Picture 1 (tube, one colour):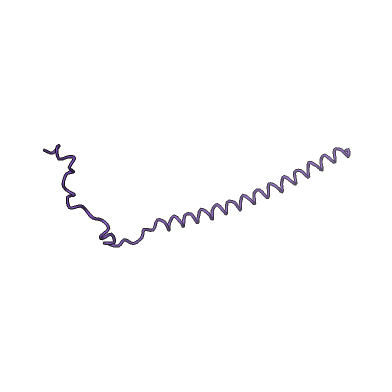
Picture 2 (spheres, one colour):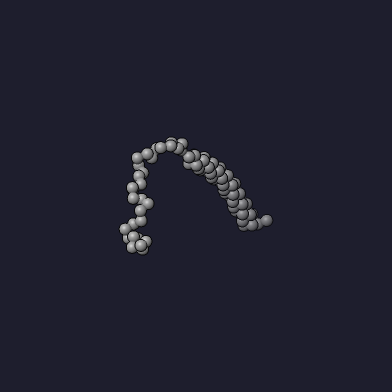
Length: 84
């Protein structure tokens, strides 16, 4: 094998080795990313569960805040002529 061919072969092998290292790093990064996504998903599920908890209701807690006018059942003045 000529020196030129041997140099080309070594360059190709070095390129393959570099690509293999990059691929291994990419897989490791992907695995770490998946773990982070799973962790975020779990935290979101926990937060959603906390938000879904309804507070205890207390009967009478709105006493005095809501009132109904004494003439609530009376028709409005604007409709009186239609009701005659």
